Length: 282
Image (cartoon, rainbow, N blue to C red; front, side, top):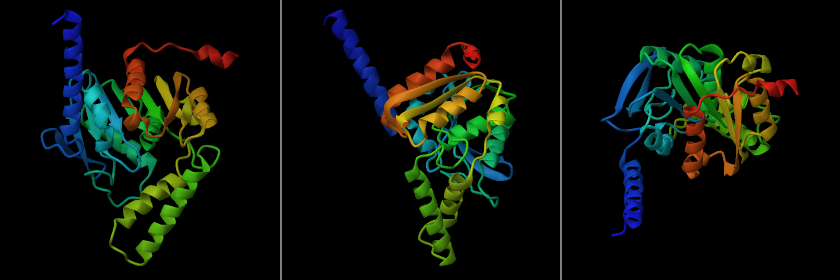
C-alpha cells in the first residue's frame, strides 16, 4: 500500500474510532466518570474526562451533560473536561429555591472552589452562556477565559426573537395550569421554573459587562434565537472580548455542526488573547 493511501486509511480509522466512542459513551449517565457533589445545599451530578487545564461545560436550559457529547469527546483530548448538570436538569436535584441564573452562577462558583480548580476555562451555551457571563462579573477569581454562546442579557424582544418569547410564556402558563389541576403526568413544577426563569430573567446591564476582566468569546449564529444586534451589544461592552457569528447556523450548532463549533472555541482557548480595545476609540 502506498504511504499516502496508508495515511488516509489511518486518519479514516481514527475518525471512525472517535465517532464510535462518542456514540457509545453514556455521557450524562456514566458510572465510570460520574459523581455527586453538594453545592449550596443541592446535590449536583457531574462527570470528568481527560487531563490538562480544567474546562467547565455549562449546558442550556432544557438539556444537561448529554447535550455536550460532541464537545466532551473533542475537548477531553487536550483538557480536563468537567461537565455538570445544573439544578433540576439531568441527574441533579432542583432544590427548594426558585430557579435563577444568579443561583446557578453561585453553584458553579462553589463547584470551582470545592473541586480546587485553578485557571479554569468556562464554555457555556444558551443559559450556560448567561451563567458564564455572571461568573465573569461576580466570581472571576479562578477563571481564565469564558466562551458564551447564544446568551441574552435580558428577556425582552430587543434581545430575543418573538417566537421564543411566545413559547416560553405559553409553556409557563400551561405548567401553571397543570400545577393548579394537580396533574402528575410530568414534572410541571420544573417546567414552570425553567420557563419562568427564561421569561423574566436575566437582567444584566452594560455596566455589569464592563466589570468582566477576563477574555470572553461572545458567540452566536446568524440563524440564532438571539438577535444579532444584542450579541453585538454584549461583545462591545466586555473590555476583553472577541466576537464570532457563525454563518448559516442555528442555536443548536454545537450538536448539528460540532466541527465548526469546537474549532471556533478551541482556537479562542488555545491562542493568546489579542487585545482589540482600540475599537472603543473609533
